[in-house]
Amino acid sequence: EAAVTQSPRSKVAVTGGKVTLSCHQTNNHDYMYWYRQDTGHGLRLIHYSYVADSTEKGDIPDGYKASRPSQENFSLILELASLSQTAVYFCASSDAGQGAVERLFFGHGTKLSVL
Amino acid sequence: GDSVTQTEGLVTLTEGLPVMLNCTYQTIYSNPFLFWYVQHLNESPRLLLKSFTDNKRTEHQGFHATLHKSSSSFHLQKSSAQLSDSALYYCALSDRYNQGKLIFGQGTKLSIKP
Image 1 (spheres, rainbow over the protein chains, first blue to last red):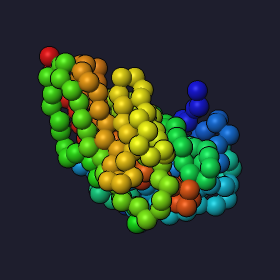
Image 2: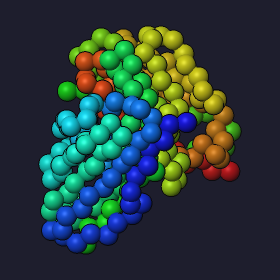
Image 3: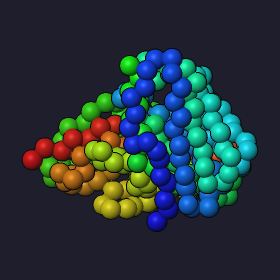
Image 4: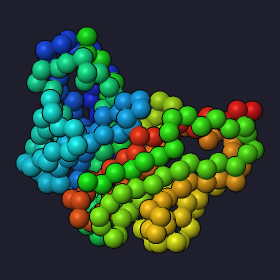
């Protein structure tokens, strides 16, 4: 089974502080993603990447940066954390067979609380 | 852009009754991939079903769904609900032109009562 690990599992941050969420995959997948989960909004794509040293904006990138230093690692960075960024964050990886995503493998999630 | 719309909010059913969760989608592309993911409490989402073949029923773990391109739908069904089916269900969409993006609906919470 594919493995995606996130750290930390939970974090409390102060408004205006910097937060870095880390993700590591051992699936040898090209694609990695960061989603946030909020009640009533489902899973929304923040950033994604299909190759090391390159990232793409998802549907809600404002206030977030991403970094993909290697195929295995993908970080999400909140330079100035805000209350509205309190959410659960999921990292995922995938192979894009036939050019389309066929399955995402999710990490266990990071619960971020900004106070 | 692409979008997915699901049955809103919370669906509460009695154990043993049939389940149907609605999913419709919008895309300009003719060959979409549709998915159902399930997320149990305190777990991460995992794939339940997927399909890219028009009018073909796909089944897994007692659930089934059929992609109907004519109506842009991919409804999730089960003949008899179990308590263990209580979870959050997401319908999702991707296509080969979307650079590997997977677009999720807002999720439907299914609660099964004894």
